[in-house]
Length: 285
Image (cartoon, rainbow, N blue to C red; front, side, top):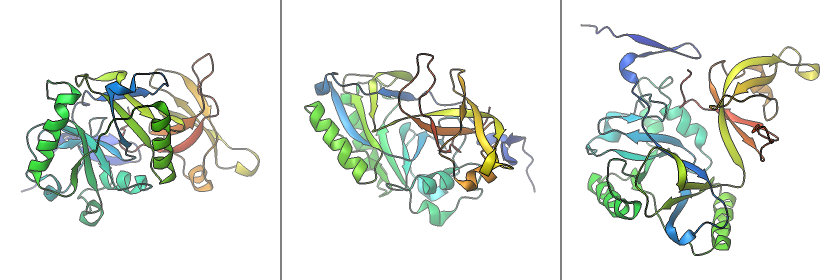
């Protein structure tokens, strides 16, 4: 017998059943690292360029609250303990991670694509202790799962800013994105603070597409730029970083995109903003 479900509309013409959505999880978010902070207080790990995956004890969900359609075998036997981590396909393979985990693309999930995925666990959101206390508990939880694709993110201490910067450069040269710093004395809490930091050779952020600006000259008849809005309400024109294919088939209005930039103007707007990619793990509002 067919089951009837309420359907929800996504940008790009996709329909998902209502059960595929959940409330956005209260994630711990990172500030930018600044030299001069007491590094002895922090654990440091590689920043994995994948899709944030929050295990709520029953299902994997994105930071926007969409259910990630992982195959049953991928999460079989996982504990009811919530876990926070990154669904990662390896350095330089963000597109594989995004296309594999996107709720709007993989119904049913592609087993062969999921075989290349790993769940890199970096925290236990429901644990009441500090990160120093959560870290051994996390390692115990991951070890109890007995699945090679579920791994605890390696953490280590760094003594000086010079050592931190050298490590970051090695990661980037190897195709990685950067580093993350967890304050050892900090509880898990939602929002941004200096308890969680990220260090990368550039800054990036997300914005929502409001409209397409028609192209001129050699881009006539195509998209020339995007008019976008940040989560704080700032609006600006994003006109560089696009391939010809991007301009022929631009990101959908309402979708979210990642852009790279170098510093900010006094107004708060980004300087030298350049398009990086569409964020399919962030649902349209």
